[in-house]
Image (cartoon, rainbow, N blue to C red; front, side, top):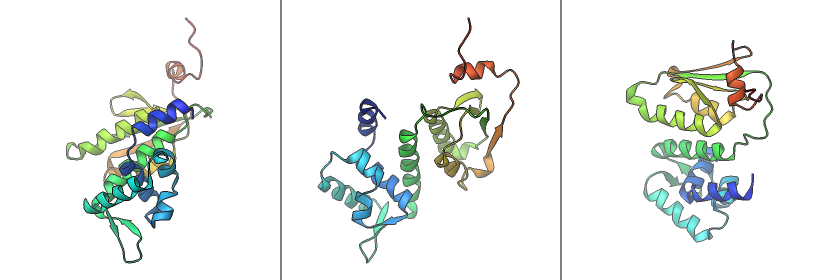
Length: 189
């Protein structure tokens, strides 16, 4: 990751988001373990420790985190949704698109998420775009590289699992346009 990309990611990532993403990853943690997590280190390394502490205080006050008697932090039910979103954004920001090689397979995500779950549908679209998926048709997205585990984790969440299908195939007829879109072959004009 270039220094310029790292700077852009840091500007778009708050301390609260880094802490919540780390908590989704860790499930429970003391201060030391939480502050040494890769999200907190990468996205908040230039911030003072007091910023981390006050952020944790606000997250607890907002009922997104709770502290148990051992001074261990745990996500609340309310905090799990926010933490999952933060985790997905952190992983998408760290996802290295440029270093992948095509294995000849196509990964497709089909979804028909009902209107009452619109926020999940919108969020899925956002994550697919940030990873580098291409909207093949409405609600059908395609990608030539292995799907990162964090996307599968989101897709298989109970809230949207019945409404999403994931397919891997090695053959799509007339895929030249797709190969050009993903830079797998050069356009010959």
